[in-house]
Figure 1: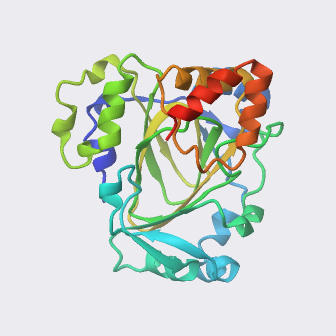
Figure 2: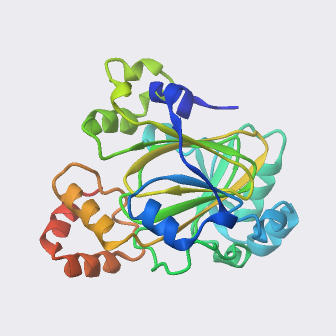
Length: 302
């Protein structure tokens, strides 16, 4: 099992577990007031245990019947943030072919990430503590990670709230707030991604000055990831797995913080060309009186 994404990051050795809540005891007011409003990550046990996906997605034939004809990108690596690590690792295949590949015991590693398989939305269901959310700006309402022994390298989301919902298998996640005084040093390490092979990439970096967090997800659990939190993900199992992050729009004060910090050059606006609802961000900036800052942030974005 590959664990380079977390094992080679010194801060993970003493990472503190994020708060763990029980979905049956969590009200929407508490979730929004204590966690979303304050951008505090947490694990919610049993958050999506009632979703049909937990049963249906175990059936390879069901997945193929549902979306088998769709064209997808199959990666034969983990999800990296650098081009050099993804070169030659992507294949254009049908979803049916990808599912067969990910189920094969001969497959060492593989991954499909997409927000376009809308046929699977019906299998996701609701979340009791998120019912009054507005549509996300930066990401699709749901994304689908189908994988075998593949994680995601450290990255962050500039906008939108994310609930990483674990469907099949288990995962471990490391987190650290991008809003920190060592952001640029950390950014350079994560964006070059040399740490993946060489723990010495962190030499001279004082990990002790940051508040590193960790979380573990089992099937039916979910991790709340606020925007502007670096996170790296590894699977804890080597067989076929599935994760479905769902997203919704952040409160206005959280959006304001993101726009302002990006405009100041303190945080990166990642993925500006793929945001499905950028107009929603424009409208939020207008309401906040941050239109000029958003224009600056957009010009700095990648």
